[in-house]
Structure formats: structure tokens, C-alpha cells
Length: 79
Image (cartoon, rainbow, N blue to C red; front, side, top):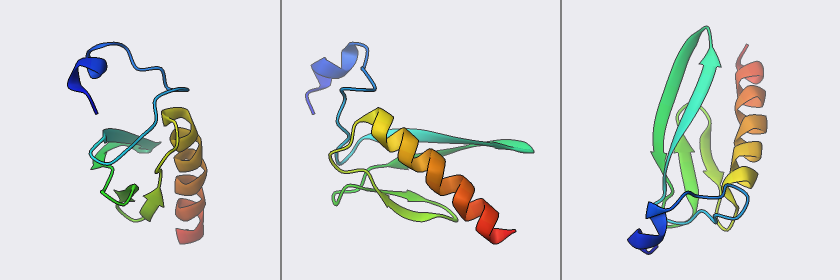
């Protein structure tokens, strides 16, 4: 991705995630936990205790919605 284009505000509903993008995933349960993660060359995010989540070609908003469904489901299954 062109570094110059990242100097402007990112529109979450238009920005398409790709390899090398870095994200922070915040999990708020009892303790607040922020997990830094990077999109792999295959378009996946590795989230500890969850595994790989494919976000290739998704907007930031689409990935956020997907992750917000997956993480609580995994946590509930573990209880």
C-alpha cells in the first residue's frame, strides 16, 4: 500500500485490508486486553485462543463485524 495514502484518515467502510496491515484487537472482559496483529501474506489474522481469521479483501468495517462475532462465540464455547 502507498504510504502517502495512509497519511490521510482511513474510511473503515472503504479501506480494504491486505497483507501487512497492522490491527489492534481490543477485548473487554473483566480485564481490557489489546492484541496487536498483522494481516499475513495469505490474508489471515492470527488471534490467540481463536486461531486464524481470514480478512482478505474485506473492508475494515467488515473485518470488525466478523471478529466481533467470532471472538464471543469462541469465548462462550470455552466456558
